Length: 135
Image 1 (cartoon, one colour):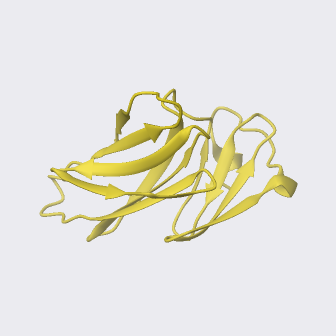
Image 2 (cartoon, helix red, strand yellow):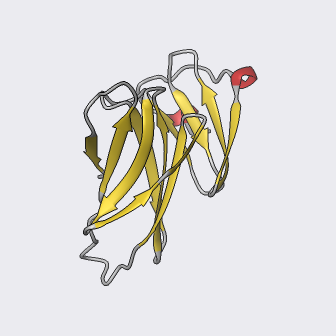
Image 3 (cartoon, one colour):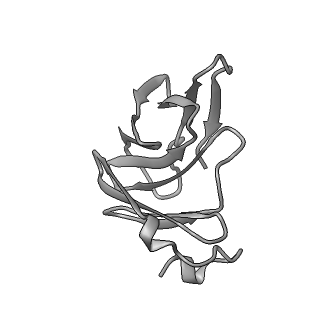
């Protein structure tokens, strides 16, 4: 359903190549498309990505009044992912190129949202650590 309504023509879903990855958020299903995109479905979200950013990740997040959950895909050379915000760090669970990190969040008002934070990426092979802002 999501892929059918996206701009950019993700292509047809390759359902026979679906992969299921278990995370702390529940099972995540990854479905590649004929145009090189990947669609993800989890317990609380559905989305598609055109590919990975130059840093080797792509992600999406969803929030409630008490938490922010970030779920993404990491390239093979990504060794670890963590989320940093307001001087705090929480390491993501990384399994089969899928990462998940949960952080508490408090929303004081609808007009002022706290900073979502930055993903901190550690790589294999000596590549320098990189951070990517969530927005």
